[in-house]
Image 1 (cartoon, one colour):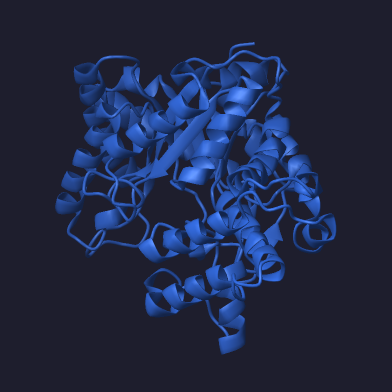
Image 2: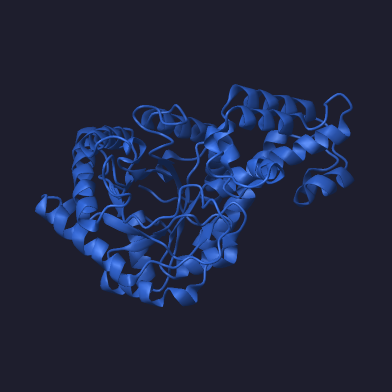
Length: 431
């Protein structure tokens, strides 16, 4: 069965909800796992980049939207994943990377970024202009947010017409959790109020119409709301469908929309399945995938330390610890506690801020050394059982470390695809 993003609402209305997993990561191994899984399952692969991660100035990955798209398509070709089954999305596209500047200056950069995304082939666009810029409130009202979102949509529309191909589909709404998860232990998260969600839609619809963008608003498929799920450094708040009855009524009043669920990391198949059933068919995941990748890397690091006399004692761990201590900017504001607490948070926090360090030359070198040391080695079953018990099928045979890493990420992706109702016998989703 072919499914398009703009058909998700229809499937929900017809009582046959289906979902799609949105992979929010720039790590090449995660991208490869997502594309391999999509090829094996004959399913859509939705891959999204965020405004801080990838933008026209490079973002923290150093990649422009065109660079990111090229990387995805290169890996897809290597994996035999059809290009027609890949959707590229831009997440939180707005002035956020430049919010320390005056609004007009920040919005001018946001316009350039949106144009670069659309011209590079990104067609799922989350418009997020909710954050205040220099001299403004931290969070803006719906009216101001909608006007700025419409301004960015106008740029996206013009860019798509110049570039050719499909016109963008849009996601609006701004009630999202902190990027990468919360910094503290959580007890409860309140879902978005239905009245707030309805107001967001109403204001955006009116403002877009006033700006001559009614047709563009007709391609708005999703509304970002808080379903009451979140993860922090220490714990996860799991989905409770009993708390969102009022919020679900929004989809009855506004059948054009589905909800987009940010921060679904670590929920597991049961809660994810409930989210899709209840009108949240777009499931975004990022830190969980790099978390399980780190889990596999550290397990292999421990296995190599125990198996190979000349490898050393967890040299990959040591390299990452030195990197994070020497360049603390990506974690120091988010981890708190004693020195011992911050040490384990650096490596094992669910917010996974260690993901910012894997692209460094030192980290890549340590990973290459680890993989080279284990490649072709026969790992005894008891040693795998000790460090990676779910991977026993790799025991007692020449090891391919890359295959282990991709398998571990695909294992998490399988939970998401099971929740989305995507099966192996179904056809790819075209754009």
